[in-house]
Length: 231
Image 1 (cartoon, rainbow, N blue to C red):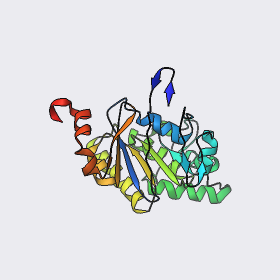
Image 2 (tube, rainbow, N blue to C red):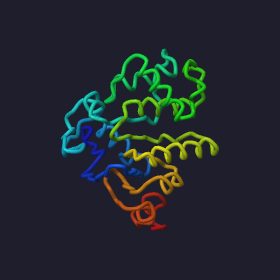
Image 3 (tube, helix red, strand yellow):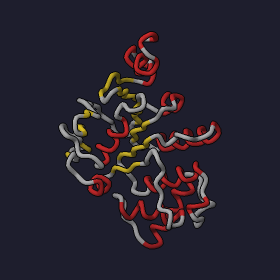
Image 4 (tube, rainbow, N blue to C red):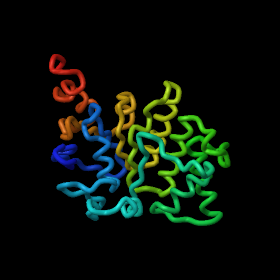
């Protein structure tokens, strides 16, 4: 992916197996969020292909990618401020791959809110939510489309230690359900406990791939995070 003369993502290639959690990690500015934007259709790659199952989705719009079963959260939480908590989740089901209506949709949204710990806040205005509850709401809305692939872009960022453990446990629940997830994260405890595979990026390129232990102990990864003296 090029932006004028800047090569933001360069010759990046990796696979995600069904029911697998893949951690996409690297220093700030390494191209992780750009990669998530490419997968979700926000950007179209300058070169290369993105394949979901047997379908080439590289040139699809974000709406088409969402309909195909890709849902995401964002670094900066994005909720619909004029809607209630339950209405935010209902919107995710209407515009994603799982299309429900009426009472069935309402019941489905409530079940998802209960799953993420917001069952007591169904009709609460979004303006009254705490930060972690905004994140829970955004996650529930992403899950409302019953995605084939869930993209979590620094979903744990900004949480205090207690909230962080709650967030990790919630993602573990999704993993145990068999969700397929790409997780961009700087919290290494979360990467170690949640991920089957890690892909490590630096300056737009992949520098390591393997289990969390293998990837995090790779000399190039140590150098990227800590500098030449520690490699």
